[in-house]
Length: 515
Ligand code: KIV
Ligand code: ZN
Image (cartoon, rainbow, N blue to C red; front, side, top):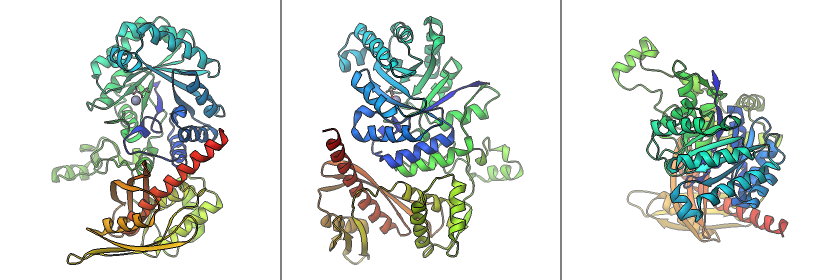
């Protein structure tokens, strides 16, 4: 079995999905879970793109020890310097430099000649090599580039120290046969190709990302780049869980293996869906809700007689288990701490105390608290940012009836510590609630998106809401949970406003530090 290295870019390419906006604590929790999943490399962000991204990459690089942490950079000295600043404390830093090589990108986007693209790539790989042992160079839009030209540039960047060559299907345009032949061509036509790893990076615009990735592996790629749940720009990136499980299940056909702990897939997928607000479609391969459900009578009958009649993957393989019943009103702190240990989440005493309080509040309304509920509460505490005084929901009431005008009354605690209250009407409960909160908050607010989901099943399931708001011209996401759907909606809205406050405060602090 040859080893395929898994390069996870959920925190960089995945975070570029429209509507995804993770704060640094959320990114850190995802990074820790990716470490548990066993990825080989994680791309933590693009430090030169914003102060927030720089801080998040630095926090991850300062924390993660068992996975190589990388960051994206354009072929510019200032990007490479910024990436080094962010990555210098991680044991195995890697830089990922990219420059487009397709005629359309060179002519219209870069306004550079092919010779200039070669020169700039060579110069910047050389520059990066002064600091980084591991230098990855990507030919952006490789699948619409001239192969002969690419072979020439690849040879030169390897000569000056590139250790990984990535050939992305940036616009999701290629087909399995074509992508496979491109890797084979580079293996056969770049004289020094064995001095570097070849990497594939597929986008899913034509729904071919997984098939293209498999073709690249069969033709010499030793690294696969992708995201969990396939999140990413437009139609997304290849879903890493699909590639890893396909290699495992069809080991009769593919003599390649990854280092992923497959039974951590479900937890990783759930965490990313929860924190990004990008829920997984029910029929998604490997981790969709329906992936292990059998509806048709003939299928159910077959599965009862022998599961393998219709089930090629066991749910246990990827960590899908039936939601175990956990605790109730009388459960104590000891059992609660043991549960946290079982999840493998590190928590400070204060965090345990805050989560236990949330758990106790939940048991006032919910008789059977499940693992999913507990994990949701843990992540609420872990990703909460308390560095800024924020708005908090004091209390609210919504009167809704088919024959009434819906009215909401909301009382909020302001960042300054006072209590403010007002009432407003709306066409429905959520609209009335949001209009009332809008009147109380001193900012220009516009709701772009609203989602409501239940955590697990059952009539007393915890509700989880995601919103996207524009606050004073800036787009932010918010997330809230509660036993009641309206309260979860209120929490999500207020959470988005608080995230805006945290973000603006962080920017102000950075401006002071950077002069
Ligand atoms: O899709 C792409 O081309 C990328 C590069 C930056 C590697 O994400
Ligand atoms: Zn990409």
